Length: 432
Image 1 (tube, rainbow, N blue to C red):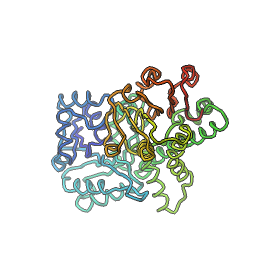
Image 2 (cartoon, one colour):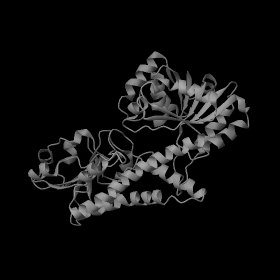
Image 3 (cartoon, rainbow, N blue to C red):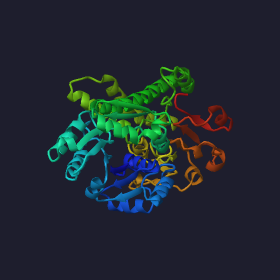
Image 4 (cartoon, one colour):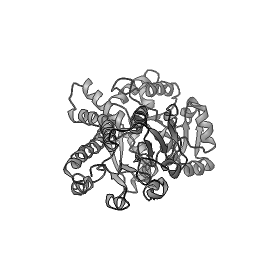
């Protein structure tokens, strides 16, 4: 099939590349010429394991192309995916849908034969209705179908999630579109993916509800970790004890920093905004957002206690600054609150992240990026394990810090407290 992915961000690029790898002809479109030129040279703008190899392979085969010409790309394609950003509006909970609607207007100018327009961007309920209305101003309704097809890709695991999805949700009442899309996804359905055909509005809400539930699980275990610390209980015992219940499940029950990234923060906010506009209370989700917002402050208070309220001139190392491992995504990472706060209190901060230096910290004095773990940890008073990258799990801290007394604050519980304390290292974890 001939597909057009409008937007080469995380969703559009990964989905487009994977669709090409299934044998489809794919054009990935973006208005950013610099990004498109880099992609044509197989230079990937995001960190996602395995993506660069797939881009090279499918570009070489001719199945994958990159363009800035949206008009030509839409005309050449049978199925058009809208994959642009839907960030939170400034100082509001509401999702900014301006990019979605702008793309819809551009698509409407280029439909001369039947096209399926798929909203793959995460959008509030009834966005599909508005997209359909925009396109119908210029195009007869028998020449297009607007469908909701939410993505469920985890950063760092996106390729695997695309190839082996739990479910494929298609929101449409059009039998013609449903048949075509079931055929498009047939290679994944044959591997065991459940194909679910719902109404368009239901598909839009499924995405938000899924992310809100997962965010709730993270917040739930983080709050219980606070209680575990007071009662001298290991939160990992708790996670195993409740997670083995099949009704609950063990995933997303790992205590740590506040959730961040491109999905959970904005999607929980947008869901609450949708509920407010519908005069419906989502008190649970509101509590989740509130608790998560307070999480970084709670961890900073713990750091202050660990350092006995003497933060000034302390040498503090952050290992990992992205919101989670296997991604370079800094969006709403708790490090964006923690590092500036500690810096303002007079701490001297070094950080190392496998995905490189971060521009977010460039303007902060006494905050330095180091190219390796050893340089970052040398002579530190406090080492904070912020992100659970595998390369942090087997560090000989005693050797690389090269200092008799230092403290480890393990925000991801990647170390055994017993083993690390045997090395006479002062250790603090989460919910331990």
